[in-house]
Length: 438
Ligand SMILES: Cc1cc2nc3c(=O)[nH]c(=O)nc-3n(C[C@H](O)[C@H](O)[C@H](O)COP(=O)(O)OP(=O)(O)OC[C@H]3O[C@@H](n4cnc5c(N)ncnc54)[C@H](O)[C@@H]3O)c2cc1C
Image (tube, rainbow, N blue to C red; front, side):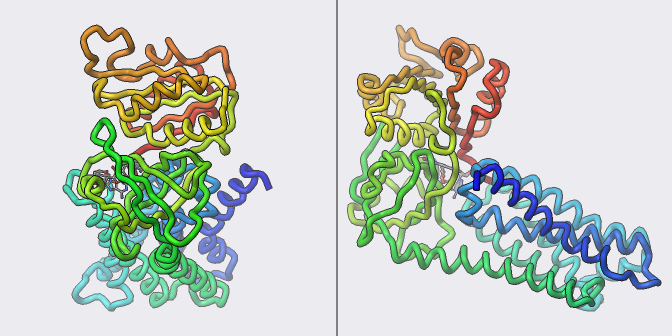
């Protein structure tokens, strides 16, 4: 089956999961005394909750999804749907109170019966879940702390909502309705077990050992890993893995990094890691032989998924990591396709892999366009940021079937994508990987 068809099937299945509670509600015989607005309030709450629950699917890094959809797209959909779900779940009590102000009693956390109290508890967990995600940086929450809170609040939302739905029992009387909610519960529990228990156990059986830690330009380390007691795993250059160190992979301290080595050497993989914070700041101190767990590969940001007649790579800073993987892979094959690499950096000295790239120019059909924010004296190349003007001067307009890979921080990706569209590069030819997830 072709990927577009598989994707369409997934989107339809996802939609069905969302509206299934309402479908069953509508199809089932409606008791005579029921009021329309009360039913509408319940329906909106059901869909909002189902929408919230299915967020475990995109964020669980389930291989059948990450093989089909770009990581960027998956997380974008996750962020958007979570906000929609929040407003739908919020609309549920608001509508109920507007329809009958007596329903306010359910909001009293001290005196309301537990079956009602569970509703506001779920809502409060949801508010905390969204607020800590949207304002994480403003709240100065460390990423690992945020991830623990995200999991705790998610469990709060799902647990309290399930209890509320089952004990209130509105539209859960029919066997089909009960079966649906039980199925949801099983799927959620299954995904949680997979993510928190089964996957770490699999990683535990296939550890990697540090083979080398090489200091690179630009405050970056090449972390070279070799499989320990197993043949390693295949990946496609451009894909991503989540790395963790220590005795076991049962940890929240796992960080995403693009493979930087050639896909032709799964027995010796490397990652280019820039020192930016707690975890990345410790990479340089990793000793030879230290244990690393590699959860990957993920994503579709790769040449196999997006074949072209030549490639244009556009990277800011450490966004060059997946580009290096692609170039090293092409270099290994003696490839002669036309390649252009726009590489933005603050200074000439901070260009990670500068010498290796220069050497590659001799072997590959590669045009290298360095763009420097603070160029050295006498610099005749491009300066500033990778803007429309810079792109317009070097993009291979004579190769309309070139594929564009853009990687780096979000503002850079937005700017470059807009510039490419303004230059009439078709959207379908542009693929981005942003280095920020929440
Ligand atoms: C798909 C993807 C691929 C990436 N590939 C590379 C790469 O090849 N090389 C590289 O140097 N960097 C890469 N990054 C960025 C890298 O994951 C973060 O720099 C790193 O996780 C920071 O961790 P820290 O604990 O050192 O920093 P912290 O001080 O904890 O955080 C610094 C910032 O990094 C981000 N961050 C922290 N932890 C995570 C996490 N677990 N997941 C996502 N973002 C996080 C947060 O926005 C945070 O504000 C990638 C990010 C993504 C999303």
